[in-house]
Length: 153
Image 1 (tube, rainbow, N blue to C red):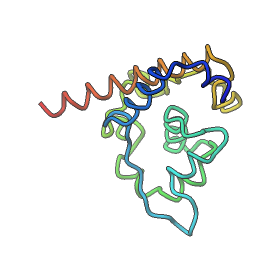
Image 2 (image 1 turned 30 degrees about the vertical axis):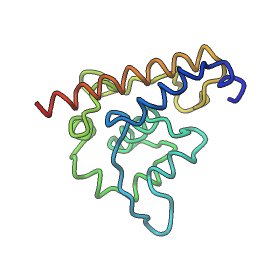
Image 3 (image 1 turned 180 degrees about the vertical axis):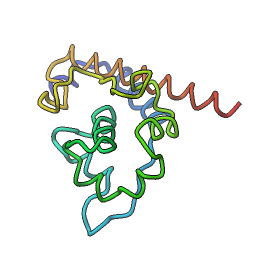
């Protein structure tokens, strides 16, 4: 990944980090450890098939609501009470204003890069893939920032 990042202009890298630190680039997960095991945020950051990517995390959450397996299924199951607050995946998406990362009926996640059932690498393997990831990430966060702003009016 270092060789890919070496190709990214400093100004582009800074802009990407800046938008990721806006409200649209932030999500709330429970911070309490259960049974001494990693939190959702810790598990998604450490898992090699997720690598802290929110689109992949959201797919795990979608699968949790549908009783399907995912790389985070054990972690998400520990927080079943949290997820039950939103009734279903569509409710979760609506509550957290994530509509710009799912299909109109909330049945599928719109991924930042090519996705094949967690068999494709979470980290982009070349500069072109990184550019796609960054562009799609920025588009999502920008759209979510706007959606959040609209709810405040």
